[in-house]
Length: 233
Image (cartoon, rainbow, N blue to C red):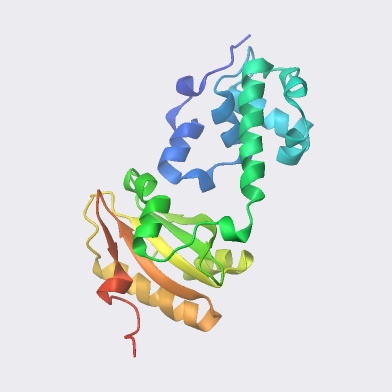
């Protein structure tokens, strides 16, 4: 009989924590997120298997959220300590979902974006493109990762960026990507990508407010630099 592996004992590319660091939280499955909370599995079952079983047997996150701590603790592979952590995480998610639109972060400048995603994206060792989705008052509807790899107009599917925006009824967005080198200076490809996004946004009636590049301790707004966006009249 094999013993359940902890996250640290799993292969690097299977560790939910590594996925979180490299790809961001949006890339993780519900099972991955629960595995991070539980941290260890049990005899004969890895932590990711335990997490997936919880979701299957209890009808997903909604079903789990309806269980109290005592009920969670009685589930095989959970116990009191893990039940308390899991219930706390589910409660936080519930409270965030209950926030009124007025309580959501509002984007008024590039600095607001840096405060929202800058620290996390500066730590990534691969380029990643995210879109910050906004409502009519530029309050954040969500942040979605749409691409990872070398970010340029030849590789990024512009349609995917706007598919995400339309799916979430966003009327505006900001594109954000990082330079793992630490230098946020825009490349020619960054400027071309910005122009492609701005043109597509104009056609689809989704305003592209900015394209931000995150470096180590520095960031660049292509809108402020006047790169890739139509000249203001």
